[in-house]
Length: 245
Image (cartoon, rainbow, N blue to C red; front, side):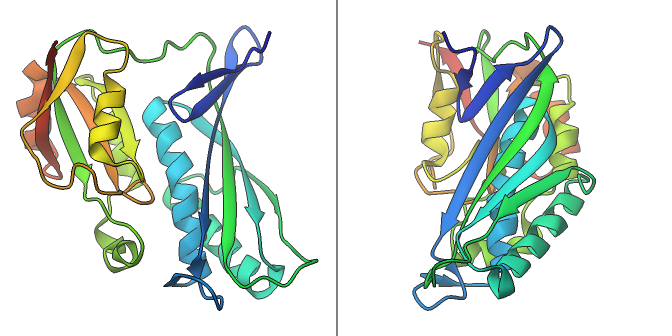
């Protein structure tokens, strides 16, 4: 019987009585500077945002990253070099410059599209309970859904890792979940999965748009602390409420 548990997009593996490993991953293809890429940008940016996705998933879950594995489907020079530069810069933004980085590049085949896959391994306390909604609460949105070229154009306005960490430590915050290609509606419904609560949206725009490389995070907060949190974090907006079915 496997000890690995699947939770949302995470895999959780107990390794001792006091510790579990938590694994998250993401991939990106067709975004770079090769002949057949659909979006033309620096591969350093491609890799940075590919890394951002699993990092955000792990930080929202409350796990501490300890290692990054990059699988670059292109040659080391120049594409791989640029990707590794982007990865290291993103780790610095997340204050994780000292964690282990390992990976591989494709040196045997000539490639015409840019591709990269990134896995992040993190640690958390063994026995950490996965979230299940047990109370009515408010749903707040951090960030805007961007994908492709929009990500590059709005890169400087996308929320930071320190802001995400600060929100995760707020007592009134009961759950956080990054939004990816499936959109806000899907992730908001996932937050209430297997509970007696359902989401009632007050904001109806962009609910089904892709948020690309986790450019939106959904935050469930205790109703009585919503006003305090939104007053201190101007980046947040309320988009709905969870109520009993």
